[in-house]
Image: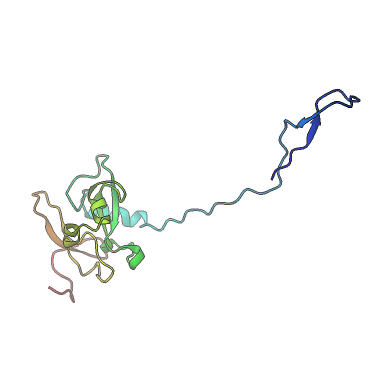
Length: 162
């Protein structure tokens, strides 16, 4: 508890004078608690740019452009908490945010359709081996595999179960 010294209010020599708290705060020698710097654990700027270019600056879920001020985010198909990483084959661009709306919210809610399209994965699934159905300009979608170099592959990688 901070202690404030008292000062005399009445004239000196008056036995009936009272004391009041000092109006000037004392300097404290106690250091302010340091807050830990927030560690950035997301993908690097280079990987983000690569994924945005690969996905054509549009949501992989619905095809909505994200370059026009639309809320968007990078979705980790396989969550980092269960072994996912920040590699391009584990990331897709989705509209919305994880907490409020859009395709990203549907993935966070573990929507079955989004899982069937490969936009979110379970812990036992490998992002390099599970295809993604990305929205196309015609609305039907195109099935692709995401590669480590940030490209689309239109044929299954070796070792992928058909």
